[in-house]
Image (cartoon, rainbow, N blue to C red):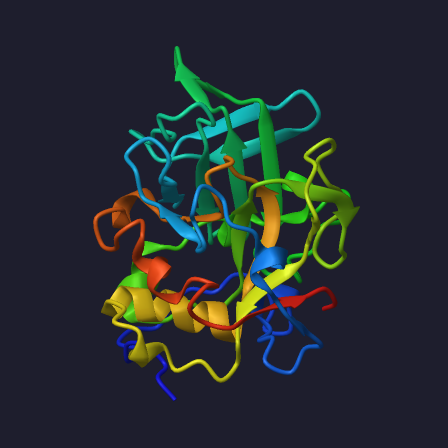
Length: 273
């Protein structure tokens, strides 16, 4: 069975090996998804890859010597090391991810702004990198349960040919329901059918080499088959989407996964961990 590109370098993988995020879903209870279940949004029957300049995800790796900032999002206060010159995405979300392996901390900042030597933001998700990665007050909290390391496909993952964890997929309209793990909450009044926390995955028998995917596309498809993508947020009405790291935005087409859309390849819905 086609597994995508050969792995050429070791990767950093957040959380414990038995974490929900790092477990494959091949044997999980599932149901086949029909086109009606999946929906067609402006004729988009696939997961779009968000690789635009304004919406691809900036990811920074903090280290000793980087400036430390005290940031309060209106609810909690954190001391975050952020490299000099870091910039959030230019789209209205103003999001960015900070991975600090030395302190075993990860952060995602929403509507982040740097001004007068200070960082501010409207929301922070904070997750401990050697934990199980599941939301709990005081250690892993924010974004209703989606950890920062799950929010975008990293460049080093595409370069290595391996994404060994679940991804987050943004869905156009979710139900007022949360499935735990991993979700600790949901958005209201979105008018959708899929609960936040549902997992969308390719059929386990999918041979990803047979659909004309690029090498990076096969890497993503292999992840979606073996680990799946968790419905974790709402997307524009245009259709479901997965974010790409800003440094990798030129590596893969935004429409790459149309070659394995749910009008072409069997997909499944997993509603239990």
